[in-house]
Image 1 (tube, rainbow, N blue to C red):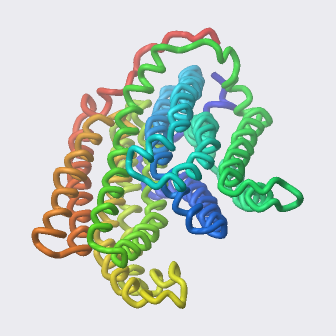
Image 2: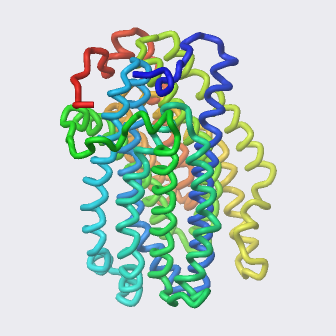
Image 3: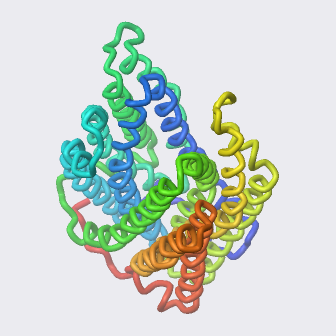
Length: 475
């Protein structure tokens, strides 16, 4: 272990210093996620120029693809907590072991997921989708499958850097990929610069190339920066670390399932909204899109909380754990109050941004969308709480109980409540959004209770964090 690699992390109890540390860590993470959303938005806008069939086929493909992506993101999120805990313990070898195991897990998840996606057309046909759309969807996902492999190898590297508080390089690399993505789309989708005009398949190729660019950029940064080059993350990569891999699975798999459960929760409400009618479904999709952008704030705070709490948990400092749990939660609540005011004051204007001026149903969609956003203003508070709180618990390797809380909150409360309010009680779309509110509220309350329990005593806070001697891995 060298001082150049293992950065000191003061475990004091100064709230002002902790606020600065949390914001400096969370800010670039939020910007990185916004960059990823911008890439998705550019893809959607450019695919729209291929026609409604291409847009519909891409939507069908991505609904399946996102399930695999979200599971992988959740599962690999354990790299940041385990690596940060190792830093807190002063164990450089543990950081290396966590990063390598994350790359191994990324390959082991991404490869079979990509193979399964080769059968997307058959899956969609079984689900009753039109053949002309399923064929287009398969053209797209043939390239989006390999994207998962690249992303799942890239994520452990990004999370390892973040564990040291280094998030700006990843942010800059991802933001540089936004215009690159648009350029590649023009070349491969529309034949720009003499390239092949591949349509929807070209969009998949563009995404793959940009994600390779991001991965190469991260590897180059690690290898060119003495502090991280000395970590020797890629030395003796072939040595499979069973113990750390099992720990990564134990912490990460429940987080992955939680992400899938949440995605399925929102997908199910969209299906129910389709039963209500096309106009309310359109308003619902716009409102969800707006909420999704604001969700990047608690998501980034949750990622930062995982790292800050894990550093304190690795050092066995309960006072620091409590402070590092409290600060991001308060910051999240402050941000969500701003979101509430924005939704209540500017709801119609926000919804209108997503609609064509000459849309014959514009006024009705704006009216419903504004109403949904007024409910979302409150549900965003609960959504931010459960997201940030999940990050806090992940920093203590507590992920199984949060998964159970999510399942109960989203499905037993949220979906059941949405259905009952929307149909038997006749509230339609508004009832579905109150169901969303109820599910997220139940989940948020459960998460807060769990945080209070975990941080009440040292034996609870550190029961899933290994503080013993870690066996050597040969480096």
